Image 1: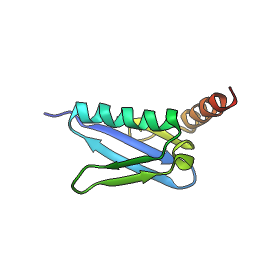
Image 2: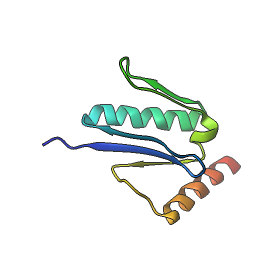
Image 3: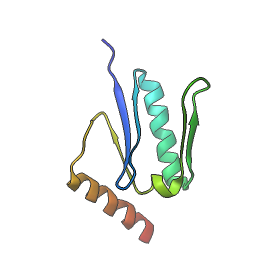
Image 4: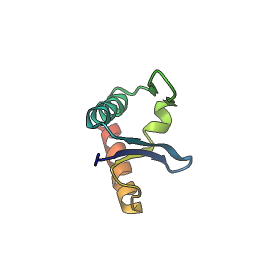
Length: 92
């Protein structure tokens, strides 16, 4: 049985921007590295798989979103902790 990896990007105002499942661990890790790179380099998240999946999330929405993996929900405490880390990073 294959393990399913899930990536969920959720914005507090716009809701779920992405909820994608991966069955390949390598593709999952590469996608997470791409998301991390966009956050660190302040780039829009744009991805096209060459067939049927196109994603574009502008950085201004991505930075205010919570990215979770391998879980379907998160608590409000998790959201506030993530948001405080992002705000702390911008003030430094």
